[in-house]
Length: 311
Ligand code: AR6
Image 1 (tube, helix red, strand yellow):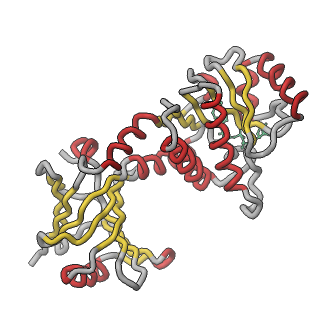
Image 2: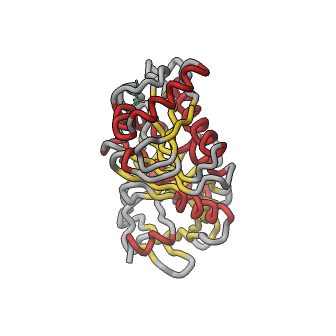
Image 3: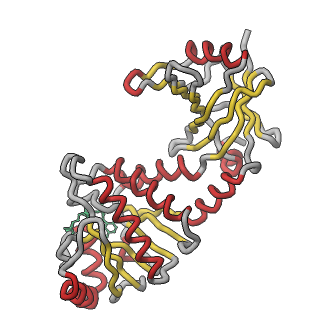
């Protein structure tokens, strides 16, 4: 006999979901050339000399013209360049934007030289400089992921984490655009953004018994993830074994993960408005730390995109 589990989606009820909606309207992701973007400030992945170079730096100086370099030279005269992780601001010359914020990313050197912290500093200091200069809209390239060889997936995580933290702490940034030049960076940033932006708090039910609270997020490929904690109830113990027996074990990160709902262990997903997942594509993940409680991650989708994917 097939079991039926219910996952009720509790959107709209939590402040966190409003915060997420707001974030979603601030951050954009585009593929293309940052020199074509019209914002208050575009960020340049420069080097410590501030004299220009290849990659996005070369493109910005070429498109913006001599005026940017002249302004850079004034800064060089004053402070002798720019340190790794720091940022300086110049006019934008012929670019459609008003300012260029030049920041110097770390050269990836195996990750043992504070590269991650320095990369986060680049995003934070650039945003602070933008706010200090009354820039409300800003565009970032994928700093350090070109000539400086920072691993792109990790750079994306650091970029998204850092800008989300910053945006949470201020209301001064109205638009933040990630401009990705290549498909890899676009994919990595999108993945990070989807997970963060669509994460909403929800509740997990089984046999009409509340099993725990969970966060539902959507990943790039339409697969959702859900994280949270199960309550150690009678049902919890019952389902703990069910979870363990059902989900595929991923030994590399001690994560138990299921990618498909099987016919014997069908999950029924019902939104508060009665919308039902007829055919869930994603699955359930459980972080099993041996000790209770188990952390659960489960497929889900937020209401706005729910209907788009599953109607
Ligand atoms: N618009 C947006 N992104 C771009 C553009 C563009 N026009 N051109 C390249 N990218 P990189 P880094 C992307 O090498 O790794 C310079 O010589 C590119 O695909 O520009 O921080 C400086 O002077 C990559 O994902 O910067 C420094 O010496 C990202 O921009 C050094 O390179 C960053 O690649 C800095 O290296």
